[in-house]
Length: 431
Ligand code: C2O
Ligand code: CU
Ligand code: CU
Image (cartoon, rainbow, N blue to C red; front, top):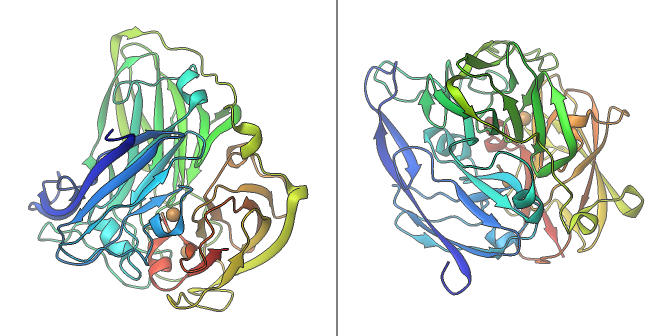
């Protein structure tokens, strides 16, 4: 912390990484290292600044996914950092404790930049998360888990095919925090997993073979109460925090199960229905006791809450082909104008038998209904990204709190990154 500003340094750079199973070291990109990036962490109310150096041979950007912040600090396609250049966004953390993440957002190149390895977690704390009875020793019983898939070519390089498969390239190798065949030692009775689907196209359904998980938080923060789940689906860009109980001396694997994507009817689709191991937990013979998960609402919870009766604007978004409402992304076109202070309902539908993962910058929304029904409890907390089953309308409630800027848009888009790069994105300004 310098002068009351919590300052981080990120240097986007080229590197080489050795992955088991690849025939040779792989050319990768990372922040402050060869692959992925450090976990950033800040508390509600703090001012943060990120000093970013782009040491890559091409322009990129760094976007703070899930963060409420001014559009000029958002790191979207309008905040490009040229090769060799520097960018220093700064803002005040003003939202609940949550597991967010950061990744590049160059228009048309996001999939390639994320696939090469540019991504990291951004954890936010607040009074409620600090006081909560939850595992919180980072790296011991509070574990970041960036889950991604990759394929390798015969030379050991990452392979990113553009063969038209939907919903994009699915890799045959799963990695957690950049590790293939990940193994985690467990020394406590309970462990908190901060799960991030950082994949470009693959949707996972996480599950343990013999025990439930206790979900405590979704994309944008805590649920109202702990939720017992046997399986948890996460689409690209989504996060969840779960607490898992372990028994002394056991070894257990978390898996991804077959995922019902809602009927992809596009030829050439591969791998969407695989089931595979994600990570193996090896549990010590003596375990440190962990509390039963519980927390109280944050001091700001009432102010943060969204109320449907406050909504004054309804907008409809239809996702089809690579278009939203019949248009592909155009950097020079503003698609929607919202007013500071307004609460809105967004009605979002994928009108083809292709799933999407719909994401809105700047806000955390609440899902009012899915196909006219109340959302399942795992989707009831604050969200910024939601899996869209085909031909089902999702009604989202959101509010544009502050940060008016008529000159700089935020994005909304599909987080299946091929779709985004090919144009399934739009721009809104808040004025
Ligand atoms: Cu995670 Cu617009 O992105
Ligand atoms: Cu985002
Ligand atoms: Cu999509």
